[in-house]
Each structure stands twice: as structure tokens, then as C-alpha cells.
Amino acid sequence: MYNILIVDDELLVRTNIKLLLQNFSQEFMVCGEASDGLSALDKISQTHPDIILSDMRMPNMNGLELCQKVKELYPETLFVALSNYDDYTYVRGALKNGAMDYVLKHKLNECYLLSLLSELKKRLNTHNKSKAFPDRTISALREKFVIDLLGGALLSKKEIEANIRSLGISLSLTQVIPIILSVDDYGRIEHLNNYNQRNILSFSICNIGNELLSKYPTGILAHIERETYCILLSFAHEASQAKTEETISSLLHQLSTNYKNFLNISVSFCVGERASHIIDVGHAYTKALETMCLAFYSGKQSILHSKPVTNASASLSGLDYSIEKILLTLVLKGEYEKAEGIINKLFQDMIEQKEPRSNVQMKCADLLSIITRISKKNQLDLNRIITDKVSPDQIFTQLSTLPQLWEWFLHCFFNMCKEIQLQMPGDSNYVKSAIAYLNRDYAKPISLQSIADEIGISMGYLSTIFKSETGQGFTDYLNSLRIASAIHLLELGERDFHKIAEKCGFQDYAYFFKVFKKRMGITPKNYLRTQLYG
Image (cartoon, rainbow, N blue to C red):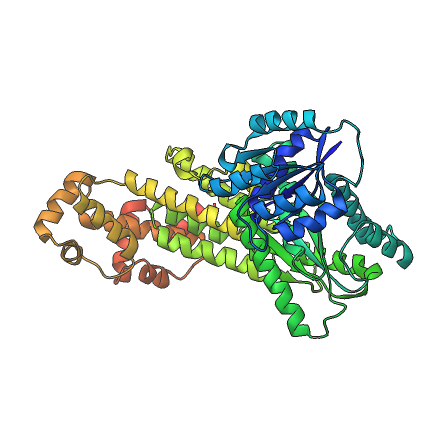
């Protein structure tokens, strides 16, 4: 087994090299990494690498100076320079000082690395020195330690202390705070990536996280399961609560920024309660895990703090029938603004009341039913309504938060209303505009003249083209909208005919009865008795 030390001041470069080296893990293992020449010298004395892959331009001590020190102190170690196009002076100096080769960073891929390692292997003593734990083995042991600690498998303080010491974990035994890190949209990540790709993501999350934690006095990040990771921080030597909170806030910001920039993922956090001794940190972690469930309501990139979680009522309830009927009516008229208001109120209430997920799913299923029923009735293409990459049968697995579901449904209802509007009668923009005004303001005292003024054409011209394109006169079309609204109010339980007439835009009660009977064939009272009561 040949050990490799990676030296580069760019975290992403080190991470990419480690990922490439995973493919050759049977013979080559990463024994450590460093961000500059000075810290690399410390790592060399601890890990005894066979090969050093080092950047040339670095702070504190650059690659050329490191190469000179390696030649002087560790002559058997092979040095390979990593460079950019403009590093020729450094590279030339490194080659003069014993570097075996140089690699242009933009050319570093699996095939190139295989060729390089094969050549280096010929120059190395084939005896396996086994001088240190490989980095991958250490990481696995540290991860197991954290999982056992959180699960209560480590029962004595001495056992915990011995593990921390032997594994080289930078963590004090007192004043320990667990922080849960959860990968947002993990259901979608699982759907789009295979097992190996998810393993690479997990590796990168841990590598970047622990690299950032190395800049703090204490801390470790470990993968627990699927989207869940745990950070342990100890504040044994920090008495100020404000300073502790500032440190945690800074760390979470750095983690979020790096994961977004390097891995293109977003994450949420839950900061747990402080455990006076590390042996009790499992209890604090469990409470934080319960609070983490609230990220379903707060959305992606949440930062929560551990608190008691009250279980919501277990009674099942779907979408209220009256809301369903109103939405159906509004969408069939293409009135998105009003439908949007109802959907916004529905989701705002679910978030504020922390509606149980079972109820959320039932209400979302009812909303889906509205979409499918209207699409089928009006022969709408579902692909034009659901243009997001998430299909209806995937919304509960790939949309992990309530705000995401909210956004998805608003998007679908907007597209559906737009498609309905395209089916409305009228070919010219004038008539389409007139119909849009009628659908919006039919309950107000509007007239052909007021609509013509809004559109900017003469009343006579609007009357002519309206009837030509819709097959109905302006008044007939307006009355049909008002009567449809009256029937809807009757179905919702309104029984005061004077109120119905007023709400639907009829200023005269007798005229309302006359128009209703002309269009429906019976009076409102008879309609109520025969159609609704049977």
C-alpha cells in the first residue's frame, strides 16, 4: 500500500484528487492532506507518505520551498508538482530540486493519473511499509465512533476518551453541542444518482466539512444515514454564550456556502442542546433529530434550534369541499389571481398549524384531483400544465418540504388557468380582453360601455366583434357568468336569494329571477328543491 499526501490551498482541488484516487485504492491511499507547505511538513512527519502531490503557488510556504525541504529531510519520498500554465518558474525549480514530474491541473483525470501512478510505482520500494492508518480507514473508524456515541453504544467515559485519543479526534469531553446537518432534496438526489454517485457525494460532504472544522479548536462531522450528518462541537473553554452562538453561526454559514459552491447542494441544520459531558450527547442529538422534522414546514436551508415538538392532531382531513368547489369554478374561468389567493391561504394555514404530513398529503391529493379532472374535462395536455421535472406521482418523494409543494401547485394552477384562457371564445385580443374583464368583474356593475372604455375601442365595434367571435351578445354572456355564479353559491349552501343576486352582480332582485328562469328553465327556488334536494 502506497501512501499519498495531497498539498494544495484549494479545498476543491484536494477533494477532486481524493475522489480520483478512490479508483486506485487497492494500492494507493491518501494518508493526509495540507493547505500549505508548512502544514505539509508536519503531516509528512506524522504520516510518512511515499508520494507527495503538491501545488506550487501556496501561502506561508510555496511548493518550490516544500520540494527543497522534502529533498533535504525525506529524500526517499517522491514529489510531484501540480501546476497551472503560468507556474513554469516554480515547476522548473521543483524539477531541479528533485521533483519526479509535474502535472497540469486541467489535465488531471483518471487516465492521466493511472499513467502517472504506474510510473511512480516503478520507482518506489515494493515493500509495503504500512506506516500509518490510511485516511479512508481513519475516516470510517471516526464515523463509527460518532454513530456508536450517539446511539449510546459507548457506556463509559473512559471508553469514549480512549477512542477520541486513539483516533486523533479534536474534541473535548465536556460542553458538547450536536448539530444535525440534513441534505435538502435528498429524495431527488436519490432518484437522479446511483449508489456510487451518492457515496461520492457523502465522501465530499464529510471531506469538505471536516476540512472546515479543522480550522476550529474542536469539532468533527460524520455521516449517520442517508441525508443525515452530525457535527459535534465542544466549548469546554468558552464561557460566553454569545461567543458560542457566533462561532456556530459562522461555521454553518461557511458549510452552506462551500456545499453550494463546490457540490451544488443546499443543506439545513438543527442546533442541539449543550451536553455537559459527551456521554450525554446522544440524548441531545435525539431531541435535535425530532426538531429537524420541522424543516418540512420551514423549507430548504433552514436553521433550527432544538425544542420540544408537540404532536399535531392525528385526525385525518382532506381539502374542504367548499374550497374544492371554489377552486374548480375559478380555474374553469381562468381566474388565476383568485385561485392563487385560495391556494396561498391553504398552504399558509398548513405551515402555521404544523399540519400532520398525512393531512398535507390528503389535501395535496385533492388538489391533484382538481388538476386531473379539469384537464380531462377540457382535454388539456398535462405536459403543458406540469412542466416541472417532478411528476405528480413523485411530489411526495422528491419535494421534501411544504414550501416546495406550495410552489409546485401554484405553478400547475397558473399553467392550467393559462390553458383555459386560451380555450375561451374570441379570436381577437379585444374580445379576449373583454372576456377577461367579464370573468374578473362580473359581480360589479359593469356595462358594454365600461368594458369598451377599458379596452380603448368604441362600444359599437366591441358589440359587433364580441357577438361575431363568441356567438353570444355581450349581455347574454354576462348573464351566463352571473347565473353560473349563483348556482355555485346555492351549491355552497347560501339560501338568501337577495344576497345571491347582489353577490352575482344583479342590481334588481326581480330581474335576477327572470334571467335565472330563462336560462335554467325553473326559478331559483324550484332549482334548489329539485336539483339540490332531489
